[in-house]
Length: 165
Image 1 (cartoon, rainbow, N blue to C red):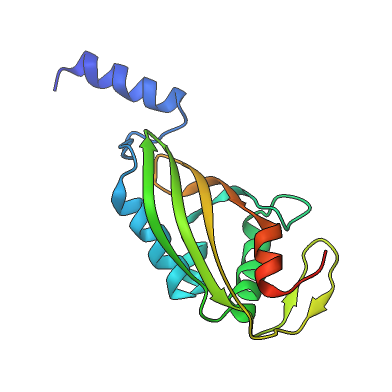
Image 2: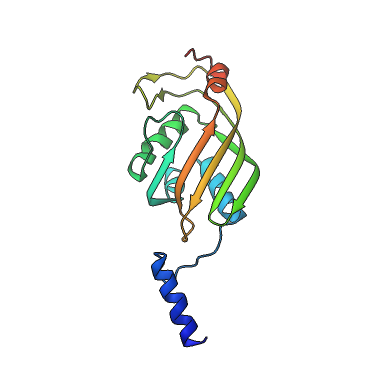
């Protein structure tokens, strides 16, 4: 490689906050497969490994964004409340380091659910949900997720689960 070009590329990577050894490859379908596999595994360690240390997760039930420290408790509660929680990625849009997944989300409410906004815990009632969801993911160059925005229709899910607002 031309030494001048190597120097230019190295300086550009440092300016972008990348180590020269890091791959700056765009994300792909394999990243999305890791996403759905982790969710469907219900393995908290596998789910946590998807996210960068400075992640922000936005979703309708949380009054403020989740960070790396608060992810474990939230996902553990979701997997306990809905032990058959499952996502199917039906479509994907990928643009560089950003992706949107269009998903079918299903589960049965059999365990306790603690509302992140109120702290109120409600036992499961055996009812199921089946709804579409959209995830907007922003990845870092190392393919960890820096930002996640989860979109779903809470009213539809509440109606399916027999929850009155």
